[in-house]
Length: 259
Image (cartoon, rainbow, N blue to C red):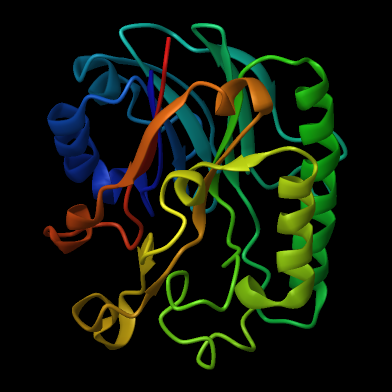
């Protein structure tokens, strides 16, 4: 089973690129973030025509997450995190797809920091950590995939310039500490498990020629429960899609699980 995460940065604007990528790579499951679409305007017909069933948790103009499944309908388990600090934001959806529990995550950015947006980010991470423990206790295969808005380290394999990002909410000690707590609680960072070293950027800003300068960083992650990690066969980053016309500022990141 090939499972991917892709922050599309506006599903209407990026729909041709999304359909193109689905056709070229044929993932079995896709977690989408930053739909910027209400529930009513989600392009279900286009997704269905591409061969995918979909469930989504939309929000007009902001946020929004979805789970797509090739040739089947995902079975929704929940929309929104338990104890979400702000339920008006559509940032989490969870579904069962062929016996694998998949959570699509769009974690708050947190800028500017310090301030209420950063406090919200940390509170949301606490809710995620608690829910992740509940999921892990079920002892099944679980994949928590999405835009975590956390650069895990200052290593150049994770970020083009630690100095440039030093004051950003994505690189603060508190953000990183919460991310590490997830990992230390038994969740596996799929990309770094199979690619311990080497550049693994997943995001390049639209500003200042970031793509052309390769000024990127790694914020899109797939974290696996122990049962899912035991099935991990492959993982990768579809970097080339960032260079296409009217591309998202993120690229798809994927894993393959053995049956």
